Length: 286
Image (cartoon, rainbow, N blue to C red):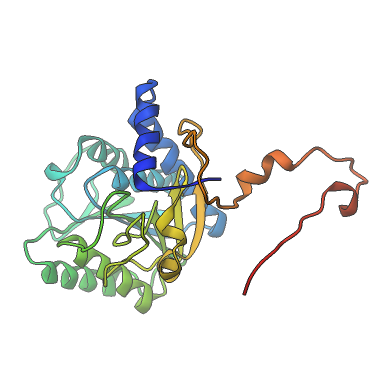
């Protein structure tokens, strides 16, 4: 599977849109893939906290949260921005989570027959990032110490194209994610890439999200495999999207993933043993 730069990724998406592929259709497939990656490692439902920005990366995370909610996960969404400042598609995916009145922490609960009590919405926006971080930590201390495991975070703050340095309120949200990971043992899933990491160079902001898993969409990004990014990226899972085509010119680097090997696996006889099927050779350095 090829490794793409941010420019190559944008070109692949634009080509797909030019062929008639809908943005929302890609978002739905990407989010479903993120949810599958979560359940691959955590098959039993727990609590999922979505840190959402205002763009399509947040939309991917919200679609994943909706999929997890159907599997009886408890969902909390933490908005870094006012809803009216978010993209139209992101707001649509947020509304899909709200079916009865949600518990809104630090705000007035709106009564509606179309929103869901199983989803908690934390509306935290502020001009001062420190206030945001303090409020989040106070909520966390009370809400999750006695919660049933597993407890995971979806980092849906920023996607490909965003580069360090981070700005508020995103910086404060990243600090909150890292604080939860170290203090509460939360597992962090970065959607596409950890917020604060340059998708091309792998350079990181000082408050870059530290992810245990990075679920990258379509193709792996060059910055994810940089030596200095390892401790921020964690384990890489690729969500292939067949609507996105790789560049015509072959890339210099590729990444091995289970989907990349599917074409090599043939149907076998039931009494076959390993030496009759295939052999793998590995050449590795230190």
